[in-house]
Length: 288
Image (cartoon, rainbow, N blue to C red; front, top):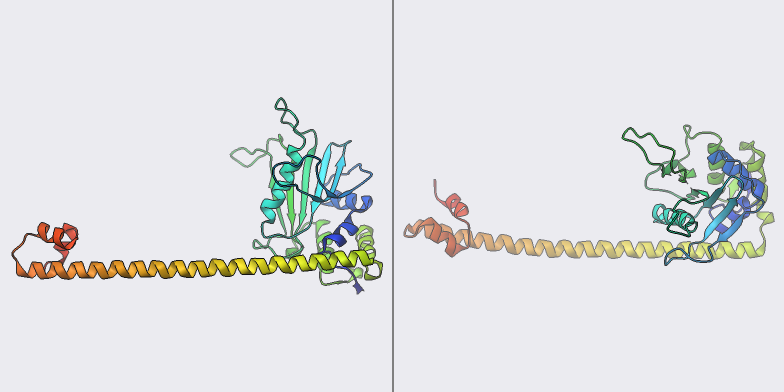
């Protein structure tokens, strides 16, 4: 059992996966693409932001030979599906420079590693942009793809070699990892890279900042949930009060109508007008 820095932290995830050979091995096993790259960028952003939000890619590599962009994101957010779809689309839109041609030169693949829980509890989820016919068969027109990997839910049906990568990521999250469980040299290299005795003071400082940020986001989510609950309760109380008033008014109207019916001097339609009821409601109040 080795003590390691958890891959839940962005600074550690980037340290582990930014080496070119590690990045290429991971992409090869997950996407089946043999990248030809000589660098992996971290915190990548575009010179001209796409839209009002300046997106930053955790790990970004561009293969100009195979015409492929691969982006790996790892952070878990409450809106991670929408957030990383936005990032993916930004990488597509950045390539479109003229209304004369909307076809991006580079295929874009985004791999999202969710280092936490997810409400769907699936090991792998995929967004495939290729148009499908009515039978679900793709036409091979659009290759772009997003994969969401959630190591917490890896299982016996998770395909190899994805499974070993995901198990290793999940295994690291508590700060300890059983290195003997992993045979792949690429994963052994990651374990060696994130061992605690190899973490620099600057990286520890970044980990501390990230932890504080996570705590703040968790507190903000908790407060937002409390506000939503209180708002729901207040709304429920208001609805209950209004409903109670409606029921009271109806009973009062029914009492007036019943008394007038007992007198037997007014027609039912006139009683309905006086009591504020429908003719059908008054008819139901007549003694059988």
